[in-house]
Length: 177
Image (cartoon, rainbow, N blue to C red):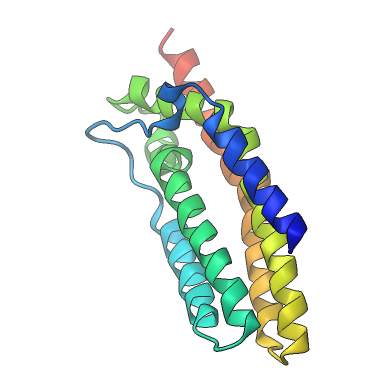
């Protein structure tokens, strides 16, 4: 538990060390929508961890911390990491969005925050490891399935979704030259 507190403090410290303008979420009208499949998966995972947080034991107490962190992390992703993915159908037709400059700003923010997002994934994994330990002691085998789903989700983000969002920004930069 002590290690988890140190990791949490480190992530919070790193996130606050950014210049003030990097701590704000870029808002603009017409921001692309996060693809519904990703939003639905976020909702599904948050619903599952919320239900686990209702357990009246140590498993529930650890799940509360994980739930809070996942809500914060998913909000960040839906604010500036994943909206460019909503442009994929348009871009696949060879068309460019009207808000290309704004999307480039989002993808630049993602590039600058990639280590922060990775650190949050590591923190989520640390809480998940703690959750697995207490759940095993308290006979909650269903937590193992949740861990697999969450791990798969994080891998998909790191291996596919985050790089694709960055590529969209790079593509828009090239096309706007």
